[in-house]
Length: 116
Image (cartoon, helix red, strand yellow):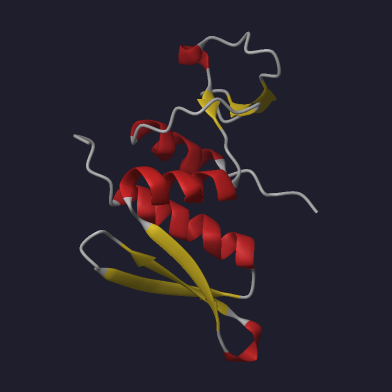
């Protein structure tokens, strides 16, 4: 098993919201995945592509946004986002955990004020 890398759209939004933790997996600005194993790609030529787990941790530790996936009946899942003011956002259901987590990560990033 391997932790899933976030998709290009989520990576672009994460970069816009200040995510800047070095990752080996990256995207070029045209969406093409690439690797930056030795750090040779220039910062302005890549978008870091963290794992879903790393981005979820960054959201929790840096922005106090907590995501959790809740199993429901009939083997589907639902995501919930809790913000610092205890505002709970719940939405979307899916049978695919990683697909649902990707959606929650994207929605969580949209909650971040760019002035932070």
